[in-house]
Length: 235
Image (tube, rainbow, N blue to C red; front, top):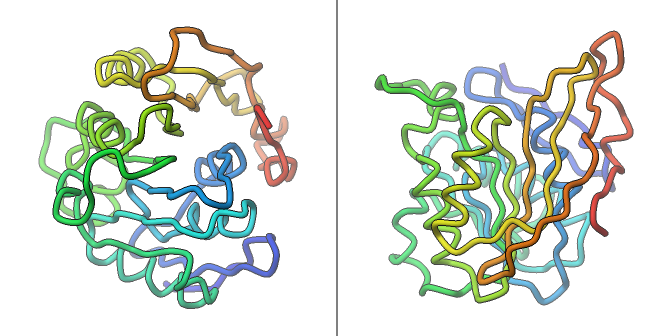
């Protein structure tokens, strides 16, 4: 059930465990969108296998990324992937819920926070690693936005990808926690169906937002478009 895959980026590789949870195009889209500077202190909420932080270590000059992962199985896999790529000096995996951040960091410690969180809504208890990685039971959108706001410095940036159907809920909670959307776009599956919303919000930012055209992620046959590996917005 485990296999090592080539991330097609500067020789990076990742171990995928299909018995747990495997990353999708969401992660690639977000990793291509996030802008990190060399001296930024960055934090990921919900690291999963560690793929986004690992990609950012190559795509940006950032030298210091902390990644929270609440599920033990996924945190161990993320740590294994960090070691596989020799990135122990750049990426630190914290096995805990981000809601417990005060055990590790003071408020307003980070320049950038980013997240590809579980965004399927559920009112039922979920127990498997795969289900918890997909459903928001452990990380409701309100708690996600509050944690990001608490951890960011003033004028720090929060990058997030979420279900397009829950756009209003996400934007409401961003604004509620003093995170002003500054840039956003939706993804289109190539057949006219909008799937995801991707937003950059700024803490204590002004209330104006630039909306980019939809990003088409698949061709007419449903095949994933390779251009997503290099597509950048707002850079």
